[in-house]
Length: 508
Ligand SMILES: O=P(O)(O)OC[C@H]1O[C@H](OP(=O)(O)OP(=O)(O)O)[C@H](O)[C@@H]1O
Ligand SMILES: NC(=O)CC[C@H](N)C(=O)O
Ligand code: SF4
Ligand SMILES: [Mg+2]
Image (spheres, rainbow, N blue to C red):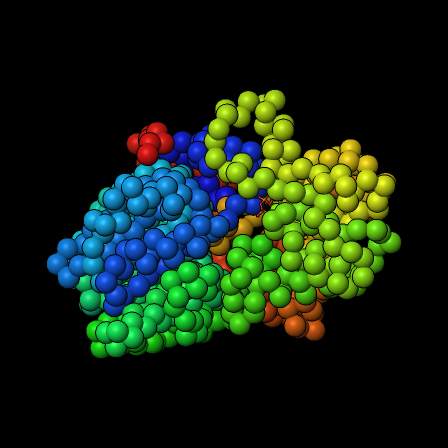
């Protein structure tokens, strides 16, 4: 995580109330969703956000418009809890247009005032903004804006856009374009004004955003939808029209859909980790089925790293599709050798050190019947701090495996992400601190293999990685950051900058 806030409690000190054993991971990012042209826009948005829950679990929010007023509800917690029907919140969010957001913070702690969609009253009227991504010069711009009189209400990078728009001139879209021309970083945005639903992707197209349509045959009308992933369309029975293109701004109003490309064209760099881990396997992202991409990566992994073994076992959930691909390619049978408890997600006991140590066991358990006496290939998508792998290898050996071979469907994660994924600092990344052999020894497996960078690109249907012009952002594996990291370059070295004097406690 790019920690640029210290006025709030540091993220690492906070119990998010979601999964106390999950604090070591490469967390997800954020989800955005928007719809215009249907009754019950907020209900559709709540469903869309529910399908996109995997992208962010700290907080959720919806802002809608009923033709006269905007209505908003933002709260820490999961979509299903916050918008639970018994609380009657969605019923009060009336209107024909709405946007929503699930947050996993990258800049600004998971506090009430940082929950999105943000909302501001402009000269032209109200505007709600929801952002997936991370702005890499937000702190730089914030300092300048504060000098010129801006008073920030939150500590998120996203609020910078609101102030840049307030200082700009012209119509809503003129101001948005002017603001976006000043920011660096990654963004897939959805915005809602009284008349418009707007979707924009940064010129590199780092984060996904799709456009869909929901027909109402009875009324002969249809609503337009913007969603981080297609699974957000599927849940409400909407059809995908297409991906919003990198650098494209789509404006939907009562005259229909308008598209423009207001930014200087740049080479596209979609996040390759979306295919490896972040997106849901049933989503179609940038023309590829995520499930098929993961299977292809697993196949490539098996080609690069054939291991004599008796059984291929995924580390669920993320390792499943690539393990299927590995098994298909190698001819070694796939087995659920590890069973995941899906009910561990919520706090039910305080995570003392002793209990925290049990973490992985509470979530995963070895299925002794398919492990005992076997040479096991374990497949997972990534190693971040190595906590999961180390404990799983120990567990598989304790269940009687004779050999344990760990195969990872991404190259070693050596660098942090600054484009919208909460990654631990570099110093915490196992692959940044250790050689391959040191990692193998620390994890305790017989062999440890990562897919090669070229292998990963081959699995995506390319001849390999073109280092002069890589097709994807792969900075967390290569250190080749496609977008300038102004705030990192200007930071004092420990990344901390006091953005606010207000310390807040986590409250519901
Ligand atoms: O090296 P580590 O720091 O242990 O982190 C890596 C693990 O964390 C993630 O899985 P997670 O258990 O969070 O969830 P999922 O696989 O069910 O999505 C990821 O898929 C790896 O399995
Ligand atoms: N993970 C994300 O996309 C986060 C969006 C935004 N940077 C925030 O921290 O709120
Ligand atoms: S640094 Fe990694 S996680 Fe971040 S956008 Fe690039 S590929 Fe994706
Ligand atoms: Mg996993």
